[in-house]
Length: 252
Image (tube, rainbow, N blue to C red; front, top):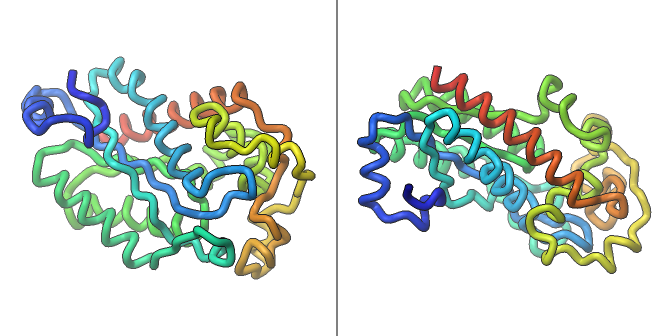
């Protein structure tokens, strides 16, 4: 089998997979380069999306589906965190254009579907991905799978902190990074952070435009100290199950 990460595979291996008679799916981890408290890396969302994709791979193989994990999209609308050093935000139009062009290239090569795996829940970014999931099949003819964890049906399968809306760089995301890239977590800083139970969802609904306005002066919400790798593994399993289910549905 070729390397599951497209960037590490060689083109003859990809060609052979596309000619194998099995459906071939491209998984695109989507995230942002954005502040995640003083304890988690700027690439937290990308790390999580890549982790979900990795957990999905054996499940897809069991279903006789070939999948390649594409190089991640690490830039997205991220204006809520724009006041923190290192955050890089791009426009919604630019984000949608990149994903659409990736889909167009995949369609030409014969991929059966594009799976968007996202863990950057900025409302603008979620809107972009929803638009992509609707417009790409219609305009390009490529099936798109998108497990939108901001939808109630999927959100209810995740942790209480996630459902509370106070889940940026707290227990939920901290657990996921600890489960996959623990060397990138500043544990000394993490264990000094008090809980911040402010719901981002509620704050955004009331008109907050920045993390600072929402009550997160250090760019975190939730309970960083409560994060654990065990919770992270459990959450990866649940999120990857949802991703696989959307892929199967997209393939029909």
